[in-house]
Image (cartoon, rainbow, N blue to C red; front, side):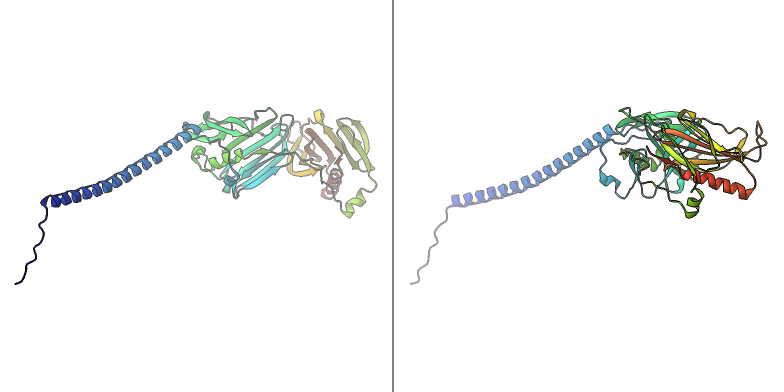
Length: 400
């Protein structure tokens, strides 16, 4: 007889317990998943809030270093130190005579001016940093307080008004940025004025102006909104002082064989006060010699040579008209030479045959003027006279 296997009877209570535990496990798992998702969302939200806060702090810092724009829209330059990397690709200009360096964009150009200014009746020295196409330019001049030359030949301004738009630091001196506004547009920008301004230590004076050049339209130009403004101010922030070099160091004159023959029998005159010497033709005689004045020449040929120094440099050109001028070197000093001829139409009238050559320069902050007068006797003879005068200048030397 086949026996049937009897299955044990399950306890209903245990079955309910298993179901309850399973449900609890599922709920715990779902809670874990939900918590993880919630935590990630909270983390993402907090991260966004932190990023937003960082942006606000950065904006606030920029706001503290930059003031609101003025009437013509210009803003200040942040005065945080500029690293060398900020000038990558820029060129460096060095002025060893005055003692400074600055950096400027590679596609900008620099023009030096060192000449006598009839407006100032003295020597002016400065540079202009020109943008491509000479659309705009930055006028920059620097000198020690005791230097006798000027750093600008500007004497006035046109119609308009100055509006302060911010500040910039130049050579450790914080100055105002002033827009010169005409009809609502900034035609020039001064740092800080059109004239000279002392450094904070009182040892130097400088002038800086951003202006429009020949390649721009004056009616439409508004310098407050052009990108070149920021570059110009970056140039100004790069200016640093450097040691002055002795202008006569490494300077020597070379003479041709003909020049050596022409001056072989010439005499020498020297000035101990101003430290110069030069040679002159043996047919000349010295008529007057003082600390700041030398006069010599040839009465028979009506050739007269004067060297004036310091307070004796004042002169006039009454009865003459200017024919031409150029830059030369005298005793290794940068000089300007101007050629004049007698003007019969002047008041008082001059002799049409009269000629005057004027040379102006400075040495060790002392102004010097050389005046040479002669008569015009035809192109050939006059050319020989001018060559003789040029050779006299070429022999000039300074020993201090």
